[in-house]
Picture 1 (cartoon, rainbow, N blue to C red):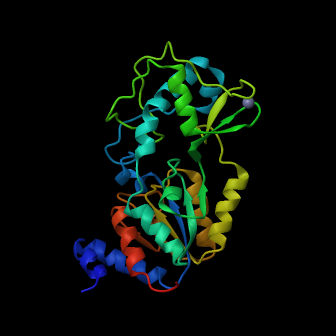
Picture 2 (spheres, rainbow, N blue to C red; picture 1 turned 60 degrees about the vertical axis):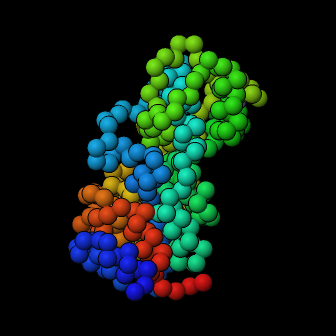
Amino acid sequence: MTDRTLTMAEHDPRTADAIAAALDALAGRRLAVLTGAGVSTDSGIPDYRGRGAPVRTPMTVDQFLASEDARRRYWVGSHLGWRAFAAAAPNPGHLALATLEGRGLATGVITQNVDGLHVRAGSRRVVELHGTMRRVFCTHCGQVFDRRDLAQRVETENPWIVVPENVPLGPDGDVLPESTADFRIPSCTVCEGMLKPDVVFFGEFIPAEKFREAEQLVRGSDALVIAGSSLVVNSGIRLLERARRRRLPIVIVNRGATRADHRATVKVDAGTSDVLQVLADALPGAA
Ligand SMILES: [Zn+2]
């Protein structure tokens, strides 16, 4: 009995059939992979669109830019969650995708996540559609800062801040702050301009060159795997349509329905850590 049959034996018959169909559809092809929040839930980062997620209203870019109060709230919450967020480790799903790329079976990963876990798992070609929390930049002079350094500075300037343990994390690694009145908002060390995390806020568009990079990755592939995304975000649907126009096999791996189940070649309704591992173990070929 191989590892593959061992793993698949744990699935109910319908899921096992879907995984087998996915393997058939993907065998011998170079995969482009699009990932969403569902890929990171096993790393302890909740999916705010997933089942059972608390309803939250994210801050829009207009609120952030227009109001110092909003920025203060944002930075306190973001800072309090940062440590737990930074401590999250890649899970078997992230590692499986890095393995597939290492073996020449995947061309890279396009992700809607801002947690940086694909990079940390060892994926080399990663298109972060919505940016990354690992970087902060100055909206005035463009200077880029490492989030770890900024977190140090925030703590130095706000020594009263206590980072709670086991805080409930938001998808961007933020928590809801209790009190923000005394918080000193970090500013650019070069020009004292306004800092902003290098992420696409609600109400902002994905930079055009970033989306083109994602399109190129799909164009250089023979199949598309969508993992852990319910495809609520339009950029995901647009990439899926690029693949469909070229009649590429499309496999969706997601717990629960997505907006495009009916457009997929195969839909696997299961957790991504498990299924991506099966794909990495069982897909034949390459190095
Ligand atoms: Zn600056």
